[in-house]
Length: 289
Ligand SMILES: Cc1cc2nc3c(=O)[nH]c(=O)nc-3n(C[C@H](O)[C@H](O)[C@H](O)COP(=O)(O)OP(=O)(O)OC[C@H]3O[C@@H](n4cnc5c(N)ncnc54)[C@H](O)[C@@H]3O)c2cc1C
Image (cartoon, rainbow, N blue to C red; front, side, top):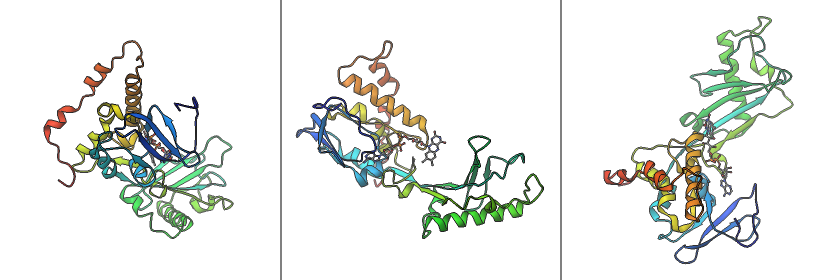
């Protein structure tokens, strides 16, 4: 909630800076976006992927408001890449053929998906869906078109060897079905500045860093900054843990700002149920130690 102008919703608006209020970070937070000067807010929920945050967002908080441990944990979290290569089709190659909607290969194209919205839709081919190491192999191509053509060639080769036939019993050559009027679409999450990766995964010895982010909302109440989403949860790559930290942020904001939780919900019970302080006694190793 903007303190001076009432409720305002900005969408598709890159945030450039979030600043602590006052020297000790206890005042209203200042948020500066690409097209708007700094405005003051009672609370800010940060949902940006941590690597994108490091690259594009200036977080200015004194160490007594957001500890250096937490800042370090954001920077050193482990993200992987993913790549998808799509081709719009001029007609479907799978009608009536019992063709599987997902094909897994042991080639560099990894997974193949087909999809059509309804019976009139010519369909779309996800010629390659890769992640982690396999997605790294997709980064070195000079252009998206060269990468996409390379995936299509590999798919034709796989189909030729598999001797999969269409309803007229003719061998299927996937490239014959691709709509030449449209460019292929390639999505590389590592190349998107506002993501810088597709999923946050565990890395050996980063339990402490993960825990610093997971427990931030309960341990940094005074700074009015809250974390929500996959980047601050565990088991990255899935919506469920992202949703859990979103609920965690909402519960803490309501509680910290004097709100009343729904009947039957008690912040004390919630914090006891989700307590991970026992991990502190275990002296979990930190990366680099
Ligand atoms: C290829 C792929 C496949 C997946 N498959 C599945 C699946 O099958 N099942 C499943 O449960 N989950 C899946 N996921 C994971 C799921 O998409 C994520 O867990 C979920 O989207 C996380 O939501 P979030 O709100 O935390 O973050 P995001 O959805 O990543 O949202 C973060 C937002 O922050 C924005 N942002 C970044 N920097 C700034 C800035 N400076 N200013 C303003 N905005 C900014 C970004 O543009 C983005 O919109 C998949 C993810 C990927 C990438």
